[in-house]
Length: 484
Length: 95
Image 1 (cartoon, rainbow over the protein chains, first blue to last red):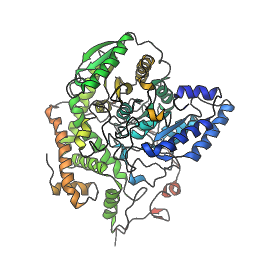
Image 2 (cartoon, chains in turn green, cyan; image 1 turned 60 degrees about the vertical axis):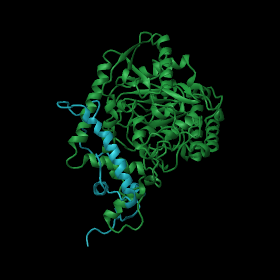
Image 3 (cartoon, one colour; image 1 turned 180 degrees about the vertical axis):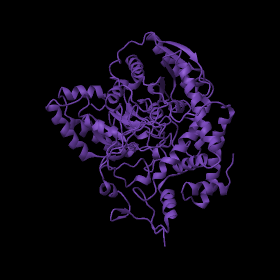
Image 4 (cartoon, each protein chain N blue to C red; image 1 turned 135 degrees about the vertical axis):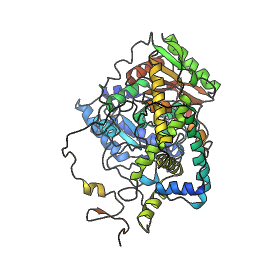
């Protein structure tokens, strides 16, 4: 049962083959049994989950259910959950019980879904390995010596090990897609503004976007149907019509034009990864798609520009953590500056401090034009590169990550090398586009993801292509043997 | 680009972050390496390119000036480290 997709669980619940309470208990048991090995949960909410499962069973009995009523899942611990600890992977918020629900949380509750707990993550979503968490690193279920990726590493690991059938993630520079790739699951980063950021603890506000992490594209579509849409409480929420994301899943992709950026397949890409992505693209060609080489000439500028924009916005967003209103406060401050400096110095981990300092530096007097303004100009060039490409092609395909899951501690003390591994994902955030990572193969028993990038608000098309691909491949069905 | 000890201390102060004296050389190296990475931006001429703050060129939405939030002071102050009579307490600022 624990290997079922959301779609299968939805049918089983509706046909009353299983109750939500039974299902919830089954997943809770798995979470508790395997959390010690994987460390993917910061909080497991057994009592609340079981109570919500019983409410869901009542709704199903009364016929007041949605497609997802009664289905267990997990939230990344970046989403505020009313009355439940929301730590963002930080000592700063270790004592923080959120006083309200994020919009995404509210919507999933309203749909009757049952939250099992909150997943581990890189501190304040800053990291690509889930090693910066105050709660310790998450392990990759395919090999526990390896990282699950990050920052949504707990969600990716939990879904890959089938401790929950689906989870939420957030993606600022690849934090949904890269861990999805490294753990062998499906992860969708929607168009900027498609999913509300209200109650999602901010890292870099012009880049952050929440989305689903699931076994299949079909499951991602079901979650998108719940969480997508305009929210007046998010000032950058998109006022754009919302699709039924399941509607086009079964459309043929005959005639689809796929762009292959030559910058994504050049030097720097591992030849084994390249082979897997090429095989993936061949599958799409067999389904009637055609390919064309395209250029995204400013790709190599995306990491430098990202490491100005994201730290700058993070230094501003994280200034709210001051030891006064909520969160960690140092012992016996001698004066107000000491209260601020020590609460922040002791409450934040190393990577967060690094990024706050970079952000503070690039925004400080005299440096704004050289750094922040320049990065925003490059952002314009990167967006134009994609828009030029979309004149000729429908979607862009390539690798999600430069390699498979690396070993724990391998890159921890070399931030720049960690940053460079996000080369295929960050430009999508700078341009605000939607993109999906789907399992496409394995190298030495570690999963590899293929990335599909769409034009603005084309999540339906991405999900359609990914779903068609998953009809003819079974990479997404592979489960690490200890978790079968 | 290389940041010396006094620059690291200045940035840490601007960011209101206490950092250990012994960690400064490490920060100095790491931040300098990151700024070297960032300096690759200078390989392209961006003269005349308009900066974008938001990928979709959205403008801030306005709403009518009505009260929409209820006062939840007590609820929110439950999460504060130190309060008294509805106020947040900090060390004495004025003698």
